[in-house]
Length: 130
Image (cartoon, rainbow, N blue to C red; front, side):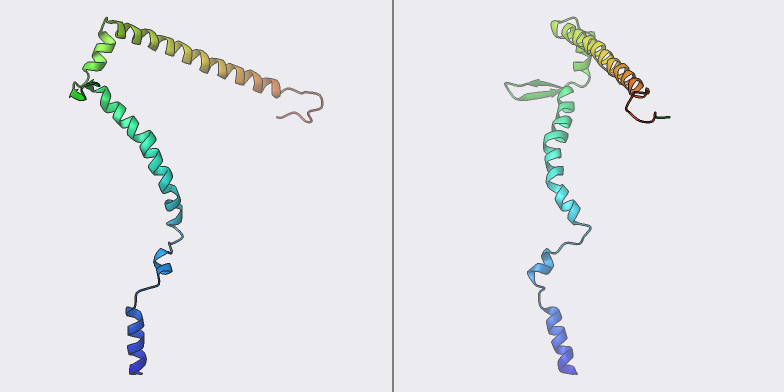
């Protein structure tokens, strides 16, 4: 009896085989598969988004590599200034608003008209939708 207990203690102390360490629980496997995608998403989407926001609040000398924190001065200069870049921004902003309203409104009207046409009784289509 003592010999069996000593053997079981000895076997319990032995390191587990390598395949036991590599075996993952069922719940961990999807996260392991998602890891490369999440890393790529962070590198190519989240990092540029956050750095772009930070750049908007700095006065950056791209040639010299120096950056000075200016806060909202960049936005103030664009919105209230009369320089060429401020005028260009205002013109581009107005054109973007007009374009967005036109495209979204046009798609909405076209989609609604198409839905109304397809909801009509068409010969050979079968029974009409309620």
